[in-house]
Amino acid sequence: MGDFRIKAINNSQERNAFYRQVLKDLEVFDYLLANDLIDKGDCTIGAEQELTIIDQFGLPKSVSLEFLEKINDAHYTNELAKFDLEINLDPITLQKDCFSAYEKSLLGLLGKGNLLASELDASLYLTGILPTIVRENLEFEFMTPIERYKVLSNELLSIRGNMFEIFLQGVDDLHLKLGSILFEACNTSFQSHLQINPDRFKEQFNWAQMISGPVLAVCTNSPILFGKELWSENRIALFKQSLDTRNFDSHYRQKEPRVYFGKHWFDGSPSDLWKNDVARFPLIFRGEGEEDSDLQLRQGITPLLRAVRLHNGTTYTWNRLCYGVHDNKAHIRIECRYMPAGPTPVDEIANMAFWVGLMKAMPEEPEFWKGLDFRVCVDNFYRAARTGIHSVLHWYRKRYTASRLINKILIPLAEKGLSGCNIDASDIQYYLNIIRERAETANTGSEWQIRNFRMLTGKFKSALASKILVKESLELQKQNIPVAKWPDISTENLMMYFSNYFDALTVADIMSTELYTLKDDITIEMAAKVMEFRKFHHVIIENQDYTFMGVLSKETVDNADKTCCNVIKDLPLDPVQVVNTEFSVKEVQSIVAQNPAQVFVVMERGKVVGIVTEHDL
Image (cartoon, rainbow, N blue to C red; front, side):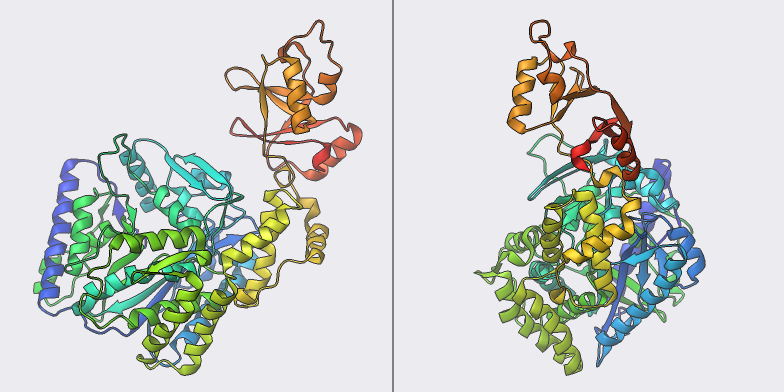
């Protein structure tokens, strides 16, 4: 999403004109490949660090525009939402102490950013998905006001024909709709780049696909979404569904999503990947001020191929072909997009070292993938996203637990690959030992989050549990301790949280969200039995149109005169106070102290989302 010089496509003439530019770029790319005008080096790495800005309570804070105005550092740039940022690290040669040097560079940039963030009463936080994000953070007002994002969202929504829909099943279920692409704003990643020799691109791309599942399994860090425990790496499903323009009813018709892993082993030129996407996916927008790539080539200028790269930027593969120009020399890269941000900078660099080492240990046999079913590769990837380090994966027709596959087969391969690039032995051992310990202890970022989230939700509602989880993990993140060594959250820390933040608690932190409703034409006898069976003190009443009518208490039901009242609508409903999720818990306490029977119904966008009674305090 890095090129912001775009325009909407207003008519077929503009669309066809831009298609002509895209096709010309593809012809030039083929020429560059055929005439050895693409750099054949393969020893440069790079990375992009996405991150979230949070406030003192662990909630997303929309200050990216103010931050970027003050930071005065070209490494920092904006992202889709106003509470997200990106750091573009400088490319570095793959040799000697490059990984520890990269970690130092990343820590320096994060340190500089956190100093500025503190002036905005904020912190920079590395996580695949921020546990405290709620549906209200995804309203259109939170989108970064840049034309690219607005056009992208509107056009994808137009192609889809209705709202984007998220449906995920794990321990919990999640089903939500949204009228923009801002579901994607929940996701932050650490994207690793490796320069590829074009003569070996086909082999390297297939190998990148093959190792994706096992690599993902050991680096998951996004298990909680909207207070629900779903996949080990929710980003994989969320990203796919948040940009999915498919909308059809027949199961016969096959259509590819714009976010996809692949359907078969790759067998062609690098340009075939782009050609496939141009043929498959319609244009979303057009560029502004494109160069004539063919003319530039004849003038001795290596073209940027901006038109086709703009289109490539609106299709999303987990292993993506990237093209760039440096010192008038073109190069190509594979970008690994599936690794999440966090839990710490050192964990991210370890993930990168593991991936790069494996890429460099690609089998030497020609077409090593022949005879292997690509669907197994896809299955490994989605198994890893669902169950993380606890996955059972297939590798060369054998089944392994993810931990065993990583420790016994893949880490030795990565060591070999990094050694072949003259990486310092100390770097190799240090970073791969971080991966090894994660696999041995099954303590990834996702596992730490889930274990502590379950402990916290045993004591508190999920909204408050999420805040504590973020605040505690932020302190460990600042220490840059590998996640496999993270201690669990202590009871002492919980008390400290309350003493520091109690005044700022809202009803969202304490409300009951597992709501049970009754229709107002239900008999009082039935209502009494439901409340007895479920041990409810209060139940929400709706009419036949699902409109909120009020709250019925057990006392009212118990005291009802059954001889003159037959159904709930005959009874007086209890007085309630309607509040939003930001209503203060201190204010609730004050009101309940005067009237213990007071019930608070929490509503957002005209819908009941929670209820608070004295039993929730």
